[in-house]
Image 1 (cartoon, rainbow, N blue to C red):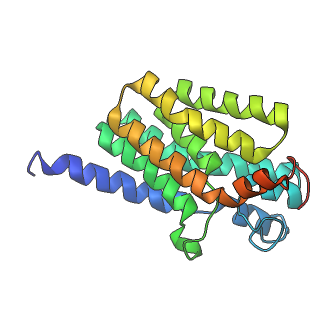
Image 2 (image 1 turned 90 degrees about the horizontal axis):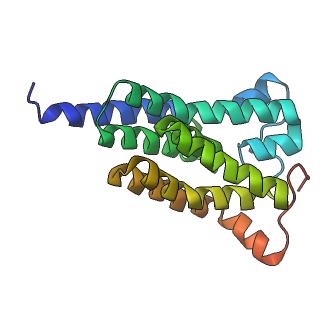
Length: 204
């Protein structure tokens, strides 16, 4: 095989695996197994941990959060552990995130990507992941609004990536994920501007 083709095949392979894994909805599966309402039909209609917390409680939300983080962590950590080139690592992270946002198994209608982004960052480097989670927790305990925590942490993520990895490609894909996360949170941003955004755990 041509040595120039090997990185391309690695990038495609990791991206495909990551996208298919990211497309699995932890929220929908968890709610179905636990006999809870489909998160797409209640509350904010978002298949994510925050909506599951409102409608199904802490246990279901914790399972959803953990599962969504694993979707981002596993493919990136696998790429890193196999010493894959940086473009393959970046592709794995972005593809897992896109899988969560636009899942092939659910008519391309998914969640907002916060937990999956955190998993991607943890897989990229534990310092990046823990730093971003730290920002999320700090804002969450301070203002008690999930969307503000997510938006602030996502904004910090590319900075953490750049200073920790010094990788242009991984920083760029992290910036893309941040932009997409903001886009998916546009209704939350509108609610924040109009004073209608709910607190963590409150019902809509």
